[in-house]
Length: 170
Image 1 (cartoon, one colour):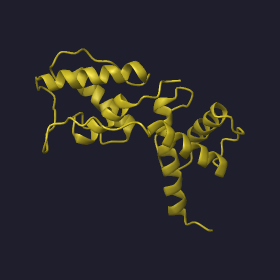
Image 2: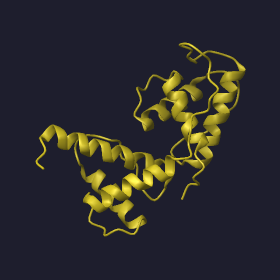
Image 3: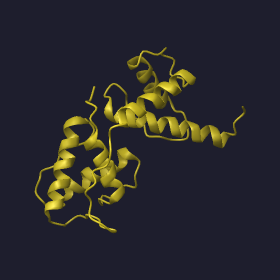
């Protein structure tokens, strides 16, 4: 089957998105943000994945590598589900706010930081301070979300996914 350039770009972005999620959980794989171009950095991440998961190390995404990335992603995320507790409506936590919910978010960020090397811990103060805003921005950036520094439902769900992940870091 022949693909258009746009279709090829979508496929590249899709598989790099799965590889990105794997890299968040597996320290052997360098983190590369999903994009439509297959860069040298993406090839390095693919090589690392192939080496870590016992595939021929080519740096290219053939069908065996594609299937292994997809299978690994499904296995790593199968047991992860968002925390079900979240304020209703269009609630957002923003810099300057003080509450127990801010303390909870700070604690969840710290729990995530214990497992993932690219998330920084923050002091638990109950105040949505500069450190908390920066940690939320970092989480948003690593998750491919808009970097607002405001904790919204999408950011909460990404944080919950990481917290709920039962897969130990490798």
